[in-house]
Image (cartoon, rainbow, N blue to C red; front, side):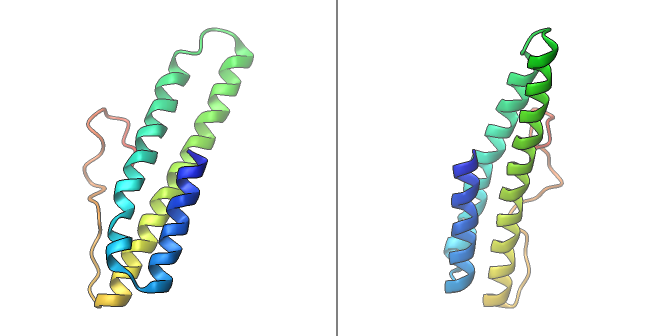
Length: 107
């Protein structure tokens, strides 16, 4: 998940530096992969059992996963700003008003 977030930030930087709208428009696809991983970490954390130390570790991993998911969201925002710089028109690449169907709202 960390490598995916790092890759997405790198792509966002390149898209902006090159003023490449197509590269920027690909960022939501990568972000969806991070979102899926975040939801998977959530599901796994629900099933860690009753051991207090294990639950604490799972909650820490949830926080880490959420932070990485936000990095992906910020990379998409950079992509949106890249498209704005190039075209002069602002548009959101994804519609955050429609959370994931599983109700976990990753996005």
